[in-house]
Image 1 (cartoon, rainbow, N blue to C red):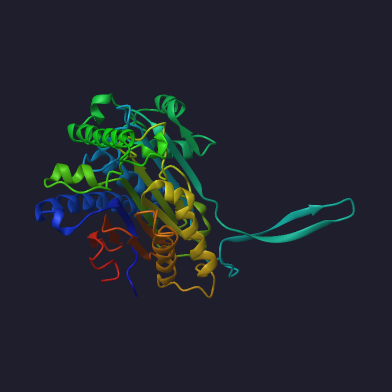
Image 2 (cartoon, rainbow, N blue to C red):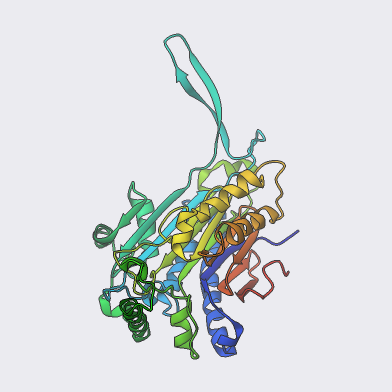
Length: 425
């Protein structure tokens, strides 16, 4: 039997080549990925055991992905939280989202996808027509966009999911909500907590390139027909040529952080106890970012957009990284989930459970939809896990920092596209 993956993380995708990393630098980043994996895994395993002893509330998968992403937000190597990049106005604005869902499973009557209930479909003066509809588990989601001074935006996104009736809060309103929460839920920090010299230097360099483009346009050597918005120089944190040392490499390469997880309860003596909604298997996804260097006009990428950069339903959980506008236009994460279900039949009795359906769905979006016509392609990557513990990670660029952990605690990390994928065991 193939071992199940229970948690995976990523730290951004982009132009990452072996020649740009020393072995020491590479190990620093792999160690950071392993630390995030360990934090999330310990929560899954500890609470799975406790759940066997006493029925805890059903946010275990959310606990795991939030904790892993919080670690990555606190790690200055990554463009999220403390390591976020600066916008054109010299401010740091962050985005994050989280999504969870109980997984579908075979019930006592053999139905796949949840419990079937009789509901009143249509009521007329003469009769009530009864219909039977399959009830799949309903996902929950929360996101924030354009927030400043929030230490861990992913925790604020979770608070939106669990403490409000809304899905998305933005800007000052989201910050006011953060201030209203207990400090043990969401912490705020002064500007100097987020300021780093390397990020500021990165902004200055991008501004210089923008000024050069503007001069070329004025002199007639540039693209004269471009509007100011089109001519604006912005930079994904992982999109340009790398520097030689660890700080240069870091400031050029990391764009987003994310985590996906599968929570599997400890099996009970009586199968009927799985009917308790508090201990059903769960899938969760979380993503966080500091955006693009030199971004203007409160630009928002795919990270806080449910279905674009983050998605989880009863079949899979997905976190994306890359050029956000392309992921938004193609609703990339949601597209993967629905291809998995509708095109490849995952979740049906005939559907394959060996991971091939998930792999195909991810490949079709990453190498097909996002590439487009090849002129304005969407560079990036995806990590995804399904309810059977199958995991895939794909990128249409040279590298993506990511790792995964199996239910027995074995970890693996991968950076370069030419490394063997998770299929190697």
